[in-house]
Length: 386
Image (cartoon, rainbow, N blue to C red; front, side, top):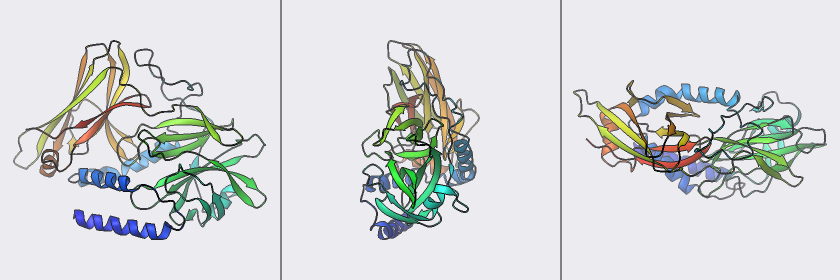
């Protein structure tokens, strides 16, 4: 079965390459394809559970995104405070922030030119495999490029609203994105500038779930360091303004990572003996210890463990982040030398149990320690014992 999936993946990739090669920049999809295959391996044995939630999760994620996974408040130019100090402020709501899915069935104004017409995409080294140069769109599509979302605001103060467009450059694997600001002309629209949407280096931008604008001419990007369909990402909103030559960030975090501030996280996975029907109970124990000198506050553990189904004995709730189901444990306040333990109970099928014990995958999952919109540490969930 795996070989058949690989063949279909490779065929789709070849078809995409043949269609898009004349206009698309070569870039490093090999690591991404490897990641996808590894994630698919992890998912073996949990297809039924994932399928049950697959119908619900995207709808919930889409609704949450468009009612505003809210950006940080306007005064969040400074980085989040040290967790030994006051709590990281929650995300605030910017009432005027808005974007919407591009509707190319009855477009108007500048959006009409973006849906049906030829535009020149900026030459860019920071938008992954998205194309440079002229691209002709019909119904919001140009080959493998799809117009996803739009937002409007007057970025240059000339009294006319510019249109900010989020593009998904699709293909096999995960694809990449471009965010371009267009301004109106007598003949249609022209690109004013673009934004960084893809960075190869560790800790760089890996995905842009949403865009928005405010009434003051600022552009907001919701960015994450991981693609929304792989590991849990740490989404954060960053604000940009037009300098006359390009867009510069002026609000929000500038990095995805921070120090763990003395917190150490360990994980252990234990399985109970098999039941007559083949199922096995499991306990994933996550331990957070403060080896620092100050009291840590507002740390959160996001746990990505797909195998099996959670039981009522687990101490942390399940939340939906984009299309992923994540177990979210709130560490709260932790004084120096203090330890907190989170036992997470799941019921595994025989296939799940085999997958987490026989070395089919190098890790059973991951736990991510974070402070607000910053990731502090990552720990792999080891293979099961018992």
